[in-house]
Length: 316
Ligand code: FO1
Image 1: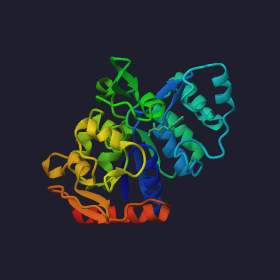
Image 2: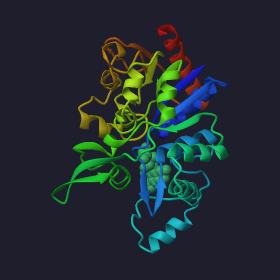
Image 3: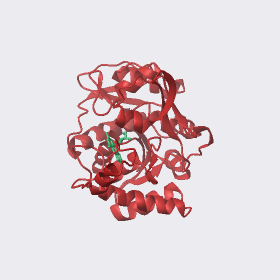
Image 4: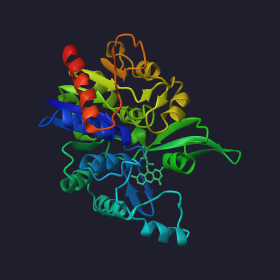
């Protein structure tokens, strides 16, 4: 079976471990958000691609959710002593090796898709990782700082300000010129099932869908599309989607996000929508199922994916 998964970082990574566990031997492609990407200290950093890659390889730091376990911070400490800004973004020594390899390959003219495939040669994630686009389109946040309206990089808003600065809007700089990665569109149109991971609906899933052609590919896919709510009991399971959803006028609830994604029969994304068993939601035109959504380990995540695939099967 061919499965295409739209995924962001941490929540998406755990979900993908579940997909891999539930569908051993199947052809799984993750179309990953690159709107969080940033260039710092001359290095190209792809947080969501790296979170997915490290987590599927089992070398991620489960506590932090990003970066490597057993990480050391000697370079970062030196950079801080030099006063090399930004000092608010923690770059671990092991992680820096990934950014050095990526940056060198990008500078040599390789596409981000090629770079990602090369990094995955080493990590063997068991899932094909494809960036949503090979072109830069970085999420910026419109905020009011020191009395002026400014666009700051998503990472500055997310990490330095802990999403604590009220956001007026999110803007993906470069989105209008960005082309979808070839393998991303191919995976969606060839899929037997399309899954929308429980990632941030605004800055992860929303950004992926904003890349030319990707939303259409999902809406018109021959395969059933089933999403998993990232919001449980009115709050995000991880991350700060509750700081993002109100900015686009969407309720911080499983129902709110489900209705935001919309039913395919009405030009939206979803055929099925998985919500946590303590929640309830009606999404007109969408088959809503309430099941345990916690992904504390691969078995939980796999159980959740199996239900998503059952719904997909019933809808196919
Ligand atoms: N998140 C933080 O909260 N603080 C950091 O210093 C930080 C550094 C970092 C370095 C590399 C990387 O791949 C991710 C990093 N993240 C950090 C997480 C990152 O901001 C988020 O994973 C995503 O961009 C949002 O999902």
